Length: 313
Ligand code: CP
Image (cartoon, protein in one colour):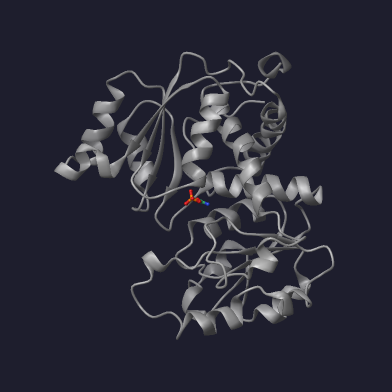
């Protein structure tokens, strides 16, 4: 299995077959994290730089651990302690780092399209770790992988994505990923948080979680992004939570085997109550766990790898 592309910028540009290739490659990497010695030498001698211009816990640490488990040399860049604060441009930053002979760049940035811009500047592969409200491809890939592992399939499932669809890169990437693999996707939230015309992406729209929930095999709750909410999209958090938060009362409307997901970080008591987040239907920590295998697969495939059993022995 091989990926015939130089960068991972978003799931919009990937075919269903390419997504399947990444998910199948990730299967081979799950077991490495369960070994006493969690390391294989497939990226030995390569240097990966993680450029984070926005805060992150899961994605940054997951990429760093994935790189280390593949034996790459890994360097972390934080915008707040870099020459960015002195006014250096992204282009100059990237070209200076590239001139040190690095092999791959992982970047999170608040500007939509920043990863594509970076890919046009440098010669090495670029992985988008989230670009503003545009895409978060490795999050969607790990969500797909978690659903495939939990439900044994993706095609034919009803996936309901709930919350701030307008500002969510996770929602956009998941819409592309789940529809390409044959799931039926419904986006659900207040009308102010559903982009007009989103049906053109092949999804259904609901403004009522209590109506959408009984049909869901998978319900993916999104974080209310207080940092991107400049205008008033709903009267109060309490009203949002009453209508679109997942709690014990609404869970009674769901199927008995529903799968509950959240990309994190969770605003507990807003998107979901602790009893749901930590309850029996939640796969939130599995999402984080499988994120490692998925990111190992992406790093490996973009390094030109073509998986054989010798690579992971
Ligand atoms: N899901 C996600 O991207 O989390 P972080 O912002 O902590 O990386």
